[in-house]
Length: 388
Ligand code: PMP
Image (cartoon, rainbow, N blue to C red):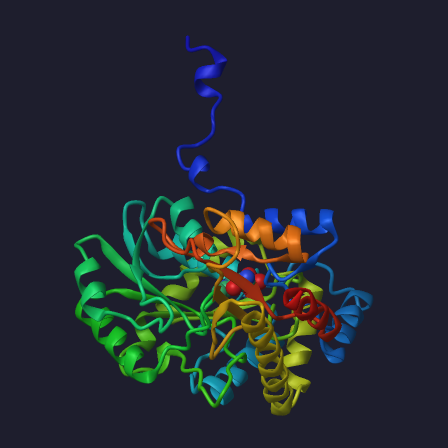
C-alpha cells in the first residue's frame, strides 16, 4: 500500500498555473494605499438600466437557474447587437450561448472542441488567462511573438509554428495588454492560414467597443469562410463595467454550440440569472451613442495616462484599442520587470503589472502594463503621482 503522502499531491499542471501577478500587485497596492493601475477592472459606474433591471429581476423572483444557453431576451438582444455592430447574422435559438464571462466561454469552448496534447497558436504579448486556460486542459499553447512596439505579425512565423497537432488559433482584438486592433488585411491572412490548415479560430472581442483614433473593430467571423470555424467570444464585463457579474457570450455554428453549452453547464451551470436580465436591458435600451461616448471618454483617459507616462520618463506604446498601456520603463530601478513594478509602487504609489506576465521566454522585462479604466479622479491622482 502506498503511504498517503505519495498520492496526496498537487496535479502535474498545478505548479505551472501560479497565482496571477496582477492579483498579488493588487494586494500589495491595497496594503500601501496606492493607486491600482494593475488590475483591468473598470471601476466606473454601470449604466442605470443595467443596474435597475438586475435589481428588478431579483424582486420579480428571477432567482433560479436559467436555460443552459441563457435567457431568451438576452440571446435575442445579443443576436441583434451582433447584426448591428458586428455584421454577424446569428440565430439566437441555436448559435448564441450566454456564458459566465468571456472566461467561461473560452473554457467551455476549449473543453468541447480540443483534446489534451493539441496545440493552439497564441500571439504574444498574450492575456494570461488564454494561456492558462489551455494549460489547465493539458492543451499546449504555442506562442508567436509580435514585433515589440509596432505589434506587427510575422506571418511566416505563424506558418512555421503550425504542426500536425495544431487545432486552433486565438485572436484577441482589441488586445490586452498591447491594445492592438487587428486590421482587415491581417485578419484576411489569418483566415487564409486557418482555412489552409483546417483550424478553429477562437476570438476574444471583449474590448470591441474600446477603439480609438478612427480604428474599426472587425469580427473575424465575418471574413469569407470563417463563420463555420470561428468561435466568437465576447462579453459585457467591460462594456457595462460589470466585471463581477459574470455575463459574457459566444456565437458559433450550431454544429459546435450544443457541445460547448453542455460543458458550460457542467462547469458554471449558467450565468447569474438576474444579471442576465440586467445585461439584456443594457443591450436593448442603450443607444449607439452610449458606446461611441464611452470610446471618446476612454480615448481621453488613454491620452492623459500616456502623457503622464512620457513625463515620468517612460516610453508608452500608444494603444489604438482596449484600455491598457504597455510602457518601456527601463529607467526605473530594478533587475527585472517585477522589481521595477515594486520600485514604482514603493516610490510613486502606482501599481502596474510586470510585462513578463504577458510574454514567454524571458521577454517583457523592460515593460510594465498600466490600466486606464479608472474613475477620472483616480486617474488624475495617478498621473500626478507618476509625474512625482
Ligand atoms: N479577455 C480579456 C482579453 C480580458 O482582458 C479580460 C479581463 N481582464 C477578460 C477576457 C475577462 O472577461 P470576462 O469578465 O468576461 O470573463
